[in-house]
Length: 467
Image (cartoon, rainbow, N blue to C red; front, side, top):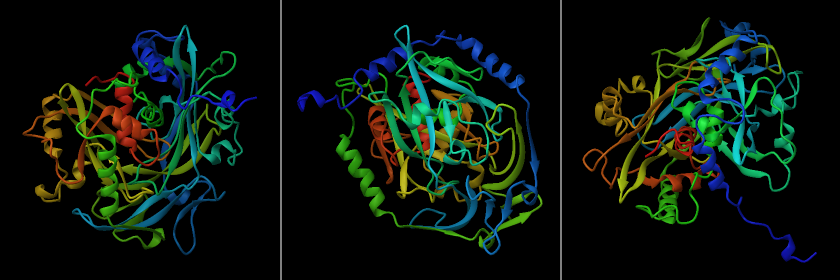
């Protein structure tokens, strides 16, 4: 065989066009009408027994506070632990702090299986229960599992469809990247985000799975709490539909200029982060309800006991991070010669592996900033708050974060239009204007685009919002 015969295309040919076709089908897919999906989720909820109740951390089965450090750990040594973290950063109103944080060094898989039906790409989605979800069952990826889960440390049943992601067939990998999770609550956590096309015969979905088009998922993203965070991060890591050569007329900054700006932001920030014993964390106390700050801000560590009839293990106990208040994650948007630009923020979070990632313009929980002087609060926060009050946002939906680690963690996601007076083309230091294709290109690689930005990109990629 000649060397030329071994050459293959460097990218999945036609993938953007296939995603465009899938995003255009919004009403009825291969299996379900879009209007019937919420009812299907309700039916799957009734088909199993689910129960979540609060429990003291000291009483969680399989969990204990380690002697000496006070870290909250699992008896298997797997899954995750709640440890302490100390952070120092070079700028901002909060420059030194300590906190509990989730330490989960293993890499999980967030994988969606794709297959064409009648020429339209569909995605195999799962009705998955997580104890921290405001709505217990949400649409999850085909596979959503930590290494401890799929190696069955819990002695539970096997993870369905896992084989498609642990040994994908050649030429069937449509997207694959190692992405971070919430840098404020996880210490250097990463998951493998994958889109794999089925290479064989049609996969018959289990009762808790269904095939949906990208457009159907986009319609559901317009509603609150139907599509879980793990699905959103995978969809936010895909190429933008229709973003082939020539699809974009240009940008305020070239790709190399944007990357150079971000590299410079990373280089100029001094960030010192280290793990420490949970028992020694300052300003946090432990009581019968969990671990929280004395002033009641930010979050607390709470315990739950769970029953879930359709999970690999049908009952377990665990700690969860429980935020105080609903957060906001918003992109400010402007058009330049008809090309939409998003104002990105080079944001430092203590749990990131590479100091900072590209975040939405505004990402915060307002109540945490109430004690802070107005001039020290996040830039553009007032603009976003006014859009929420006036109902003028281009897109606004409340979505829950990772329900397997966070309890009732809610973020209001928005796109807010602006002008030169409210968001000038020359923004404050730490901010830059980028087009959607530029962010999509960076999202294909790990540790550039944070999980909140990927949720908002998923809304664009799926057609939930049009800018």
